[in-house]
Image 1 (cartoon, rainbow, N blue to C red):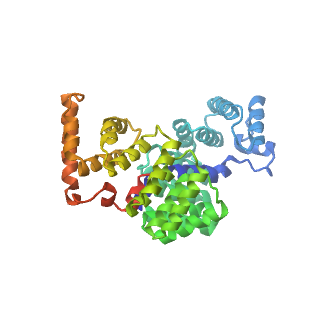
Image 2: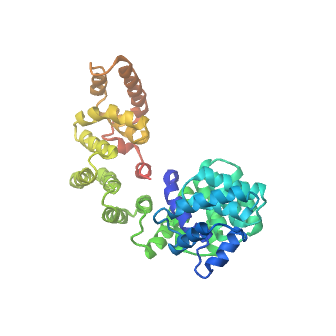
Image 3: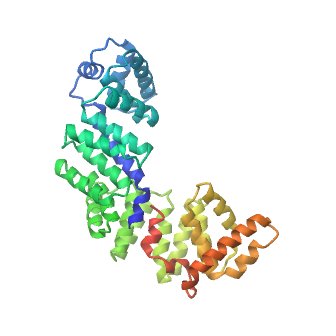
Length: 399
């Protein structure tokens, strides 16, 4: 299940933003005047800035009617006037982070921490997060996290966010250690959901299921399709087939515009040669997203399974181009290549030799077809490419 973690960064960023809201200092128990004084160190700033900050807090930290844009612009002007004020630069960096302006965020946080010598855990933690978002392999992020924890080794946000960074970097045991530590500091179901992904990365599927279920027991309609897909895959790998299908069915209900749940159901039904449910799954996905390249690909795979290569041959060159442009994963498109090489090699070779392909394209496609044919030789007697893969391998393509 390790490949599941390749795309969990979306959930990671969502959870990170939720837990990092404490850093916005929108605690209603703190007065506007006290907050203003703490952030700006009693700078005699303009009244418009004071008004914007007050409005921003009144909105609960949400960006309504461009308040966040105005606030960041006013803060930038103020930073020019007070270049040595550490608190001001740190707060400006965080506001730009909220605007997803990561380069500017990093510049202000870097100055607050490295030039103005911030002694605050939150500032170094935020610098580490932005460093990791700009360069997930950067060793600096770990140095900055260590610096933050040096100021407060029990800071929940820092422990939690470093766990997320380890998760993104594929350091699953380190991520698990930080999530366990975070649970000791502040146990909540959100961190259990992410710990489930760390368990997936370590191959500890029962523990992953337990953490995912704990989260969904509190938030049964959680707005995170990735979580439901991961749980369905875990159930399947744990031989809980009925629960896997039930989870996918719920995903279809909660996310009616996402065809992945129907396509994953197709993958489950196919080994049992349940033609009716396979057809129903494909039909549902086509109804949801007829122009989705994944849906068109799986529709072609189903046709090929039933002896009809024409749809696959028709869309393969276009899908290959879309994969080159990043609209669909090459891993998905390779499923169709393998299916055609396995079941329709001669017909596919003749197709690429037809006049509709340039000499250059024909040569490129035929070369790839021959390479995939060699790869598929051990499976020459199989009826479909899915028989050559573990179910969780296929599921992981959707994560």
